[in-house]
Amino acid sequence: MSTQTKNGLCPAPFLQENLFPKTGGFIDGRFCQTTKTPLGAISCCLPCPSAAWRYTDSLDRNTQVASWLNVAILPLSIFLLVSYAVLPAKWTHRHYLSICFTMGICFMELAFIVPLGSKPNQCYNEITPNDMRSDLSCAFTGSFLLFGGWVVIIWSFLRTVALHLQVCWEILIGPKFMAVALLAGWGIPAIGLALMLVFTGVSYRFGTTCHINHTNSLRDYWIPLMVFAVAALFLQMTTLIYCIHIYVRSLFDDKATTTNSSAIPSYSGSVRSATARQAYKRVRRVIQLQWRGIAIVLTIIGNVIFFAVVFIKMDNSFKISPEMEKKAAGWIMCLALTKGNRNTCADKANELGPNEATVLAVLILLSLSGFWNFLFLVRSTMIMGWVNMVKGLFKPKGEFVSADARPNVPDPRSYEMLSSGNKSLKSPDAVVTSPGSVISPSLRFSDSKGQDFGDYFGRDAKYTQPAYSFSSPRPPTASHGNSPRGWDPQSTFARSTSPYGNDYNYRNP
Image (cartoon, rainbow, N blue to C red; front, side):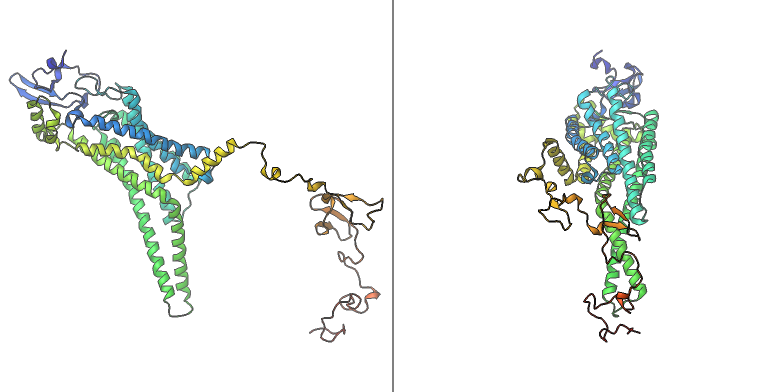
């Protein structure tokens, strides 16, 4: 049956609804309106896809641009993930908050890349769009987009919570927080996606990527998503306000300390100023480490709030209601009079939801999410890490620069030296030893009886105790005289420290 025959009693380009089956595709996605005719009430529908009639012919071409933009940005996200997985942590400073956030961005990018290969048909028939049950590509693209949006928002919220705990409450996040974050960061999006697919579903709204249906979309997707987004934004602003407060307080404390009239500040003032400076240094250190996360969270949350406003406005514009029919009367009449010239009637549809420029801005900003993520999370050390890894792969395994660059000199360990005895060099009994066998006396250990235990490194050697060894106590002998200290300075040519010369009976009181 030709399209002209399917017009029935409806003016072109509208098609009569009862000429089409009531099963297959997304029936609620039809854009139909009931009109009264001499033969009775007839439901006339706008041909599918309805968004193509609402906007100009350039909409499909511009949506393709957004898809190809994701093709160019996806390798940047993959570069981050591969760097996190391959390079050591000293080059990437990887963290599970950044890794999971980047994975959520990849899901959103795949939602726009898959249609380039599958080239799906947006319509089930002339007035009915396809949905996730009638088109496999729609099921994948819609799931990727919704799940990626959930993952990005949840991990933005978790990153904000982690920063708030460290800055405002001085709580160091550890394994327990990581376990809760991983459970919530992937569990909540999975549960949310399951509920959305069961109770709401996805279909072709505009472009070749499926979006959530307007029925129950507020309850199942937009309101929960906005709750986490607003909570993350509130915590982020609270943290920034606290940082500003700490900074201002440290300035006033420094001023009070420098302008104090007393040379010695009071105890309470010193403690207060020291505490303010310490808090400021701690907060500054955390901000220096986390500024990338703060920037990406603020950027993504701002974009998500803008997306939500645009999509909610679009849902309300395509929802059949008496108010919508009143606003669309002039546009529908223009289409009927011009036989479906949508470019001529595009100006009369401005009140029916967001204009074409706003819709394209949403698609472009969605595509740029991966670019912002790469811009804030990439580090110059990642490039250095890859360069070092590539150099290590192509470096010869047998190369040892310090040994090869040295001239042909015998190994120092092969040098020989005479033992420390009194034997002459020409004596046949002279023992020749290597440096490894010469042990420093400072490394020897012996007990009170002079028994040697060898050196610290386990090498045993004979140790001859000298005659004047003080390793063990000995009673004073007659040769030492009446010296109170048990030794005679004159016999050792030592200088006396007594102010009375060698009068050893003198004792300093």
